[in-house]
Image (tube, rainbow, N blue to C red; front, side, top):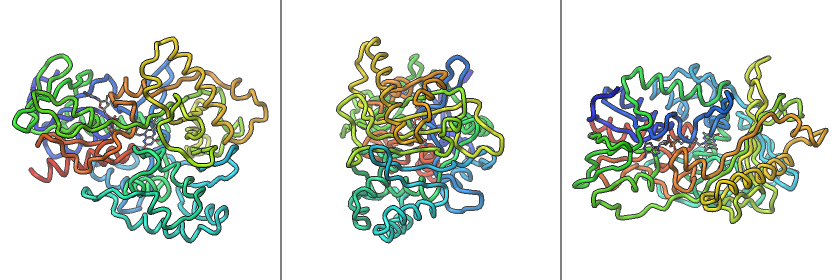
Length: 477
Ligand SMILES: Cc1cc2nc3c(=O)[nH]c(=O)nc-3n(C[C@H](O)[C@H](O)[C@H](O)COP(=O)(O)OP(=O)(O)OC[C@H]3O[C@@H](n4cnc5c(N)ncnc54)[C@H](O)[C@@H]3O)c2cc1C
């Protein structure tokens, strides 16, 4: 039981960014407490159990993977700053991933954790573009993507200075946008470079037991450093007086005070918590991009269906890649397939069951207000549609009914699920379109970290927590 109600720092939300900020601050002797509305940690990147079976939410792959000894990378920085030994995450590398475009994925670019593979695929499929691709890669490498005062620049415009083939342009944007764009059609070049490096220069990996391992390590570090955590303790209001956050009111009515408050729940979500006559001068619009995901558990390894090679497949069947909030409930034309069995777990080591996941863009408004019966029926209908769409981009099954025969159980989440379990308005996984790199708010001692500060994904979220704790609190104390 926590008896103190005043902290040096109160953190709202126990997702990846809140946990990382907490560890950093606790290491430096700050009295810090994380307040989380739910009874599990991890937020957008967590897990749940149904019938004794654990499902990961979020984690397809941890991006930014580099092998030991590679210096100056986000993963290295994060491990150092959180004092985590890289063996604790026990990361296993992807086998290979693909970008597959065309009605049946006729144009395909393979990539692995070795950038040379993608470069040679581009040289083979787009020989006239490879010099431009190399120039683009050099521009990405040279870009300072962590500057907190960078001004937004259109990534499409920059990429078109180097590439003239719209198919290759779209093929590169597809994974980069699916794994980290809060904006439709185009994105900021700084964000593009972060994701390009995270996906193509670095790469994908995951622990054998999934996101639980990462969360367990973070929680152990936090606890060992003396950090406190209150679960089922949502923050209902932030009381503002004279331009400062003076108290947090919890869902149960309890009042907490803190010298500093870090919020990881999103910019518009945080603005809504601020009360007491102080209204933010500028309203921040919630993001428009949300997703559905199907999860299919199989009674055999995907390799037995002929699907043993691909870890992640980014697909699109249309003339142009249309990354936008769909008019319909879901847009199954493009998406991401993840087969978690296809990481290299070591000889003879397999996940106990086959897993096949498919993620597509979805429209929050078209899901949010459905009566329960219609909601369930629509989920069922779209589940079938996503399965059909995704299978076009994987090797053809010898028996078309094989997937159905191998299926043990299924689940599906929608934008409504995301809002229910993480509080993100509009089911917006990547948050608001406009990012706030410095994490400042209208209140002098209230800062943002996580998705709306602008570093996305698991590694990005943790780095965001670290950098906001360093920048606003540790460097000033
Ligand atoms: C389907 C899906 C697939 C993804 N795939 C990948 C992937 O393969 N690789 C990758 O790197 N990233 C992936 N991501 C993205 C990654 O999960 C997120 O970028 C990252 O986890 C965001 O962390 P965060 O700490 O910023 O925010 P969040 O995880 O949203 O944390 C915020 C926390 O605040 C809590 N909260 C909200 N309101 C309140 C309140 N009022 N009081 C108290 N607590 C509150 C929430 O419950 C939540 O725990 C994926 C996400 C999803 C959903």
